[in-house]
Image 1: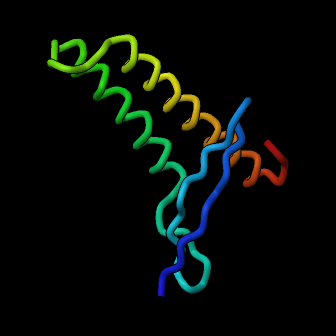
Image 2: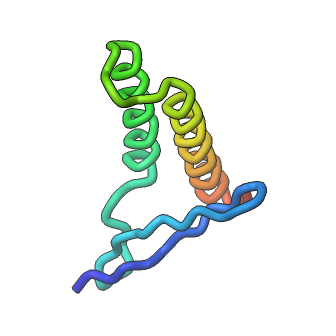
Length: 89
């Protein structure tokens, strides 16, 4: 049986809550490395679409969203590094 939990990542003025899927033993089913890679890949693909001239995409909005996704990925990476080294982010 799988259970949904949430991880909260603090931001300057807000928090972003990410749902996590864990099994009945509490084992995380998606690695943080995969999540941060996904966030960076998504932003990169959006930028590629803008550069290719895709209709309906605002360049400034895509750039801002891509930056925020990269920041979130960075925070996930930092938190994981701190956790694995026994420190706090």
